[in-house]
Amino acid sequence: MNKSVDLTKGPIFSQLVKLALPIIGTSLMQMAYNLTDMIWLGQLGSNAVASVGGAGFFIWLGMSILLVTRIGAEVGVSQALGRKEPETAARFARHSLFWALLLSLVIAAITLVFTPQLIGVFRLSKGVVEDGAISYLRIVSLGFVFTFMNPTFQGIYNGVGNSRLPFYYLLIGLGLNMLLDPLMIFGLGPIPALGVNGAAFATVIAQVVVFAVFCIRFVWKKEIIDPDFKRFRLNRAISLKIFKLGLPVAAESSLFACFALILARMITKWGDVPIAVQSVGAQIEAISWMTSSGFATALGTFTGQNFGANNWSRIKKGYYTTLGIGIFLGTIVTVAFFVWGKPIFSLFLREPEPLQMGITYLKILAVSQVFMIIEIITRGAFNGIGRTVPPSIVGIVFTGGRVPAAMVLSLEKYLGMLGIWWAISLSSIFKGVGLMAWYMRVLHRAEGNSYKREKMQLSLLPTRQRQQIKIEEIDDISSNQINH
Image (tube, rainbow, N blue to C red; front, side, top):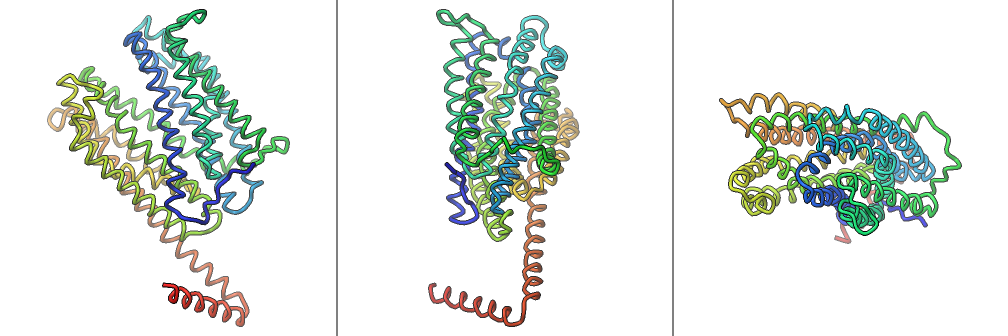
């Protein structure tokens, strides 16, 4: 059964919202995965949470690398369907899954062999914390193939315009993870209490089940496109296209993780409270980030299909529609952070010192919320037209600029600890303005080229045909005036 969605025609606003909502839900579920682990592990003590936190960075890094195949699938599939080439879309799907499998195996092997050295980067306390982190990462790495293949499946579904089905499949995994976490961490009946290792096993089992559902529905049921893996032949051109699309995004995301680690280590100078505040603040801001990322992915798919159909007018309308939604959401978040910062942050931390610091954190980040959302949405638009390099350049330059900016602004003669948070907020403003200006220029040039191309094609036609086309255009204009 073919459940792909044609985004080259129909109401733009409703299409974007229908596509974005399941993606946002999926992102929130991923957040719920992490929170579920933290809630149950928190009952074992801070050592257990610290162990998982140390290992979690490398899972994040691995997911960043696998953006190569997810973005390659989303853009390649959507553009092929826009050109009405379902077989090409199937080839992109097959190649994306092949490279996802290969990359997952390589990352899993490296992680298994060098686990102690990787965990050693964090300089965790020797003994329980470090041993727990090593054990957790080793177990989770056994399931990396499933953990990293699932987002590529999701990218294929997003590419065909059906984000609803992967949401349901990932919901199954979340429910299973929430059920298994307490059973495997604390034990019940014949199930032994495995502590930190139990959380790792629960995560792996949940990901295996989600992978199995994707295989059944996508490979055997062929519910969106016919992948027909019997026809798979490794193609150099398609492989290069996938890496050309996905590699800049993966590189930026990986570097973002590294820059975040550097800033986190910088803030340790001021003690444990700022670390806790920044961690909680990041979780609060993640809701804004995930919502805008959902619309960015939806816009990327929408733009990809219309780019394949060479419909620049619809691409432009889709971008401005999504931008309007994003600015509206960003304004709400900005007001909420400024006006209701205290009740929001007190849901997580209630002690006077961290609460007051948290209110300040939200006010600093509120300044850049609209610009952060503009940057994320524009990134999705760039992905849709297959130009993933510009957002990666802007992202790497200004996110990397956070480190020297934080070093200067955090000097005691300037802003102290708050300088680190101001560096983050200011860089988001520069990224939003810079990337939007770049995309506006691309749109303007594309429309000009499209007009020139149509004029040239018209000039090649015989005089009688050119006259007939002009007569039909006049008739269309007249009928529109009568109707309105």
